[in-house]
Image (spheres, rainbow, N blue to C red):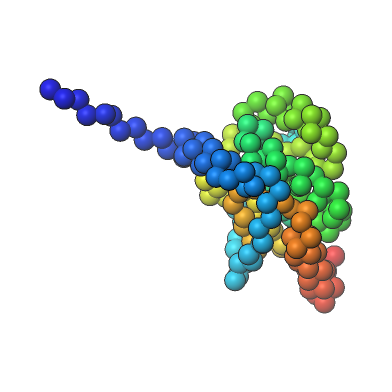
Length: 195
């Protein structure tokens, strides 16, 4: 009697690991500083509510960032593509971060702060704040199937663009695109007479 190999269903956690590994090894430039343009959605999309932690173990909601343009990034310290991308996100926060814009990079590391703090120190990340989601609930809510994944959110809390995979976020075309989004949202806000 010949035994057939058993079929094992990995589910989304296994698929996530496989997708991340494939993405990181796809080409040498993919995980380096490879720039790819940001494609905006034809219409803004709703973003589900998210709850995650700060470094100080306080809970924060995504809606707490309303009024800012947000680049939401889902990442992990064990993801090689994420490790290459994080310095770009840190510099982007240093360039544009403030009352109108923030990079919100949420780590899905199971060890939480114990994994992320040494990672930030090793890479010298000084502009990004530490946000944690050890439950990986954000991935489920946002329908993220691989990391890194970045979502551009307008001041009203709507998704206006999504990018799968690493990117060189400090590349001039991307910085200009994000600045245009910030300026456009400021113009709309002033026309509406809102803060």
